[in-house]
Length: 170
Image (cartoon, rainbow, N blue to C red):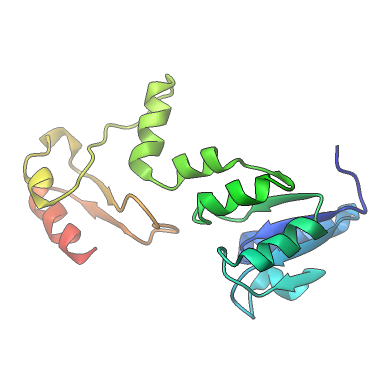
């Protein structure tokens, strides 16, 4: 168990990270944030803001040395970064878990393979996949497999033709 006043690390400095920093402070923890944005919401209130990319190994080493445990604010931190940090410090969630969440196709397949209910879906690698998709998938939501968030990389589609048009916009 990691108790206050330990220092916790956060990869990512957005709004969710800011909530984490605030809650951790209320519990008596210190928080270091690693985020490239000098104005990141979490970085602005963190005890320390390391302004670096998620693949800056000198900054990652500094974060690992200064923190008792590290987490991530969002799923698009490179899984390799989490693997690297896990050699030196407790990292949650694991790189393996994050890598599944980084790809919507892998994520839905993982859930289905483990007996969890998942809406029907089809992996789309090109326009032809959309043209051949089952009519039962429409209406539906076309999503990018990676780097979509907060509605970005998504389109509501009512037919294969609408899906092709949306795909071309992605």
